Image (tube, one colour):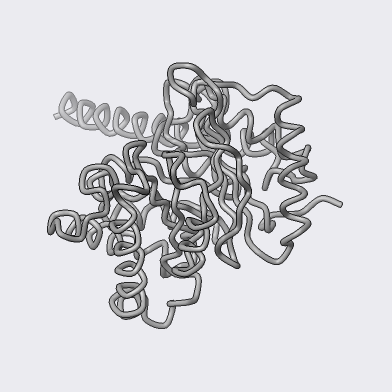
Length: 322
């Protein structure tokens, strides 16, 4: 039996604003960039905000994302690289703490509407257990303390046990051990499973309410320039259905990060039937809806232009008569 959205296994992509790679493949040619998120959210139930890694979005921008998407739509967001890659989670660096606070505060519109599924703490490849285990544990402890004090204060009555839910993605093999998973369980942090060349696809659940997976791919330069085959998607669908069957009461989410040439959104759409899932709406229906919007907008502009010309002509007529 198909699971109707909002399902407990959500499939989406890492990012949505890929004008060059996705237009004509997923987005209709007539769609403008400001309509991409609204269009996307009519078809897939979740998206990971990738741009927050490079630049902390303003609260106004986040509020706009919140308002453009359906009530049941879910976001995840990636922590800024100034926190994870430059400062390497060091609480000794005041600029890192300031950026972290700004990021968390600006994400409030999504948190307050229960539309923010998780915060992804993606660690750099140089972040080894030997050199940075103290940084990680100190940061996770700080996160939980902030969440229970300032986070609760900022969210007010909208604060829940799922507010400010952290996920950690490792990129160094030294973390692949039971000790790491015990650490994440201690601080109630979700482990980010990955499909990539570097780390094994360990489907570990370290937080009782969330399973989180990122599909990077097996491209050469870079990994995420990769198109998963039908056979690969069928394999992963089987694996994920097994994970889901063992933990049916928690939220499961999988994001495709292979955005080149529209591979991510193509693979996301192709894996849905393999998992007995459906898009929120059929894409042809959504295309028709946005085509009508586009046509209506063009008609309004043409009508406004015609009205302006008619007024100008009326002024000329009066001038000639006088």
